[in-house]
Image (cartoon, rainbow, N blue to C red; front, side, top):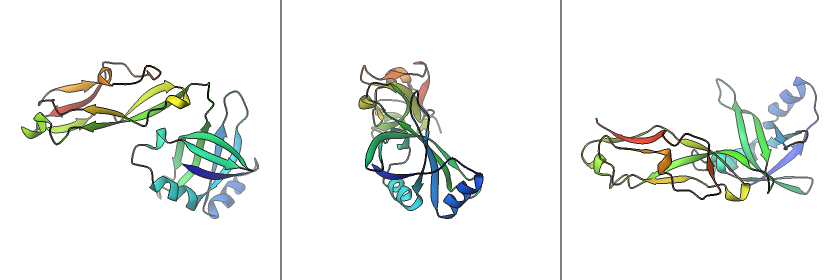
Amino acid sequence: MKLNVYKRLKGKKSDLTRIRYAKNIPGVIYRPGQASEQIFVKGGEFASAIRTIRKGFLPTTIFTVERDEKKYHTIIKEVQYHPTTYNVLHLDFQLLEDDVPVDIKVPVIFSGIAQCVGVKLGGFVRQIIYHVKTRCLPRDIPSNFTLDISSLVIGESMRVSDIDRDSAVRLLVPEKEIIVVIAKR
């Protein structure tokens, strides 16, 4: 996903207000071991990019940000929202470097819901964990973890230890944590 970013000067709060008034979003690009870079993104461009991302998949989406004909691969680490309007107030990007591991929240999705034995018997799928925190190199970032729940009956669950993953991806969540349970209605 491509985004154009523009340099902004470190300054006063009034500069941030001016940027937001122009319907742009101030942000920062964090670099490991270096000073962060103050930037802003055009609000319309960011909104159209966000619309193409599936719900819950923002943490694993790699953005190619372009500034002054230089391209960087980044992920969004934090989005700050206005408390009442829910407009985006600030974006924190983290620069991805090929040889530096990154901590990332990977979404968990399920397959086999329609065929799930427990659901057919009147139970329902109760998801406990929506994202699993992992550490890996940028080239190994999974888009999601998929769990097949078709064989679960009412009262059965799947845990973090049931996630099938590449050996390059290290889970930062205890393996005993329950991700999903088929609950009784």
